Length: 502
Ligand SMILES: Cc1ncc(COP(=O)(O)O)c(C=O)c1O
Image (cartoon, rainbow, N blue to C red; front, side, top):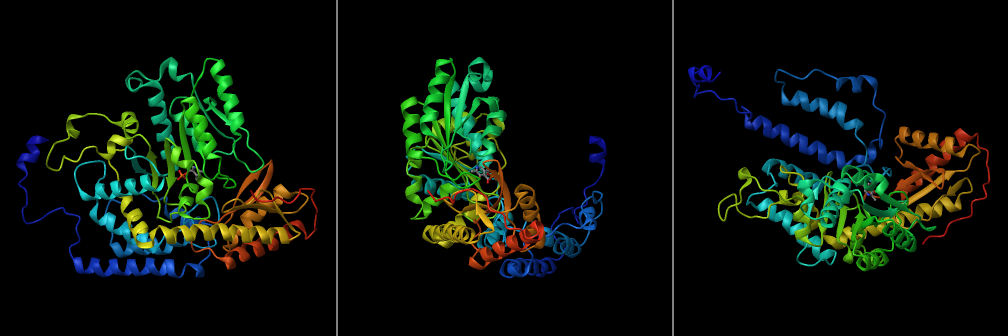
């Protein structure tokens, strides 16, 4: 092989570069792509929110690996014809499922610029890392963390929560546990979160080797907030059994209904008990930008770590999760590693330690910070806060519509931006499951579903900055329409009392 390579003379006049032979052609196609995607966002209301994928379209994506080149405009046509129409739909104002941000044209452009720079933010001394550090600093100040704090962009809050569990685990067991493994001491660690906490916390405990059973799922009150006294009692019980409580996770916006735990009470409990206090603020933490919501997050400033997503209420295009840790040294102790090929220097490109790879599992990392930086600078926190407040006002409007409509039933208090309701019917679980699919397939709106107190609920999470009153009205009209068709228009009363908000 080596001999063969040596014998083949290198053709200096040819090359295997992947750059285009004609930059002007690429430029004009690139401009068309940009125009098309700007039109896509500008004209999004003219499209269905979502539509089922036809079999022949799905089959196109079961093709053989391409061996030969293909013209870019042909590949682009496949994108416009077979990918764009069948996307998730969260750019559309009628998208209210799960907790999906709508993205912005600004974020889209920034993503293109980031791809152009093709920076690797694992480490080294370059300005993209300073952009990320700038956002860490902004978040530190926003959440009232000390100067010792550290932070890092990650894919999403599932990853940020996992990393917080790992930091808390290493803090509890000591750094040597990273070499030895978690051993017998690790088997004694227990964590606490509410029954309404996101499933990724239990998954994080599992991945961290502590086991999901070691996560105590604590009762909630009628507003779905963790029962702090029950946490205290469970910690005491576990200690009496010889276990080692090490972590409490508070939710700043539960996934089902947007409940915010009493973060101040959880924080003081953790300080009193010497336990790591993590806040899952996937979407709710950015509520701190809204003057209406910020007081409800009181106590978040005492957290040891906060996980949040800019791609939800922050409207940064996917993905842009973030972890903020009060004590940067504890954060680094959980992930930093030495390797000759990653040696840090006092000068040159290998300078600028500490590197982001010291604060998480990833070495190669993209420039997620750029689209976040553009978003924060272009819109400013006041405007983002006003947008967040407005999504909550729209949820209140939906609640009013549900309460005013005898055929609909509210299933949970509306505390934030999430409304859980359903069509009243005899087989309500079954019929509402069908209604959700009917509404999604109609392309009018895209709610999701959940179960509240054992009852199937239509769940509308108003996260998208484009959503407005007309979109809420369209959702209600569609639910009533499909509900009447499914239930044969029989009006069935249930005994559930109306719910007041927190
Ligand atoms: C409260 C909460 N925690 C965690 C997550 C997971 O976040 P991600 O999807 O960014 O991993 C979500 C997602 O909706 C959430 O609502």
